[in-house]
Image 1 (cartoon, rainbow, N blue to C red):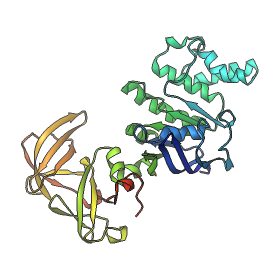
Image 2: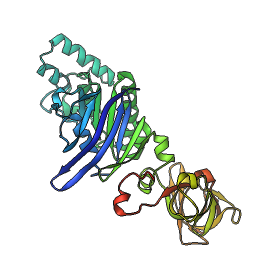
Image 3: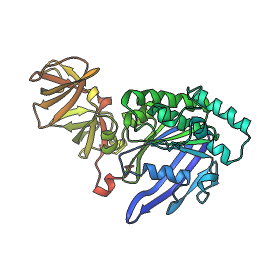
Image 4: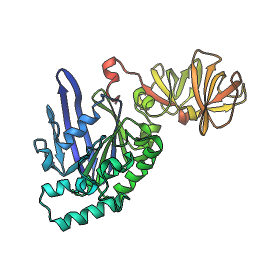
Length: 361
């Protein structure tokens, strides 16, 4: 896929607060890219700079190879769908969809055809005359999408558009957005703080925090190979533990030594203190005494399809988080086993400032 959007060294501050600190980002044509991170991480500001609603203090924005940093928002080939949908309550559905086309003096027959096409695309045939207050939240979200689609943008910017919906409807709309992206053949740039949304819909996920890009990659790469403790903790549940490399591809955690797949070649020689990430679903429960270490279950929750347990280690002071499909009782003594490929070794930040940025040591 060819590059469509490129951000180079984008910096942005509001008053004395640095919101973006040297952001570099590339978005390919027809790609579904999600900016993921906590509130205040800079993801919405990044979107607004791409849309032309904010101007960077430093850096440049390129679209299809052309510098658009100083181009007004209404002259960019992008459309934005906001979290509150920004529909006009005094207009019906058809009038809302037609608004931008009428501003551009498009012929009425063209407008009617476009309204019909857009409503069919979002599965709302025959809703032209409905009032906005007669629509559910999910229907309003679809109308906002239809209004953006009729402008034939090359990029859709979506700023947490599902945030106001209930869980079931939000999950249904995730599939709808993926379907629309495939049918329209355009680029989606999506903002969310919901990891499930990011992992479900995206071709590429960009994890942000404190104005920096922490990591970008496919959903599988982000989940299976986090580059630092922040990403590991933000994307799914994790056990993040202090470790010490004791030999080549051998790490000590909680008083026990484990074989791992990272070593000197990856920057983890013997004697180095590291952070270790182990996903709770990657810890196998075995009979007591038959694993790499033992522990006692101190709490248990049923989470729909699996059980979530806290286990107090027998040889150390660590509480391990486990996820397992089989039921075990609180107070039960168990053994635990972790395969080497499921032990992720990461560099420890050398300072608080370094912990805010992606580590590449």
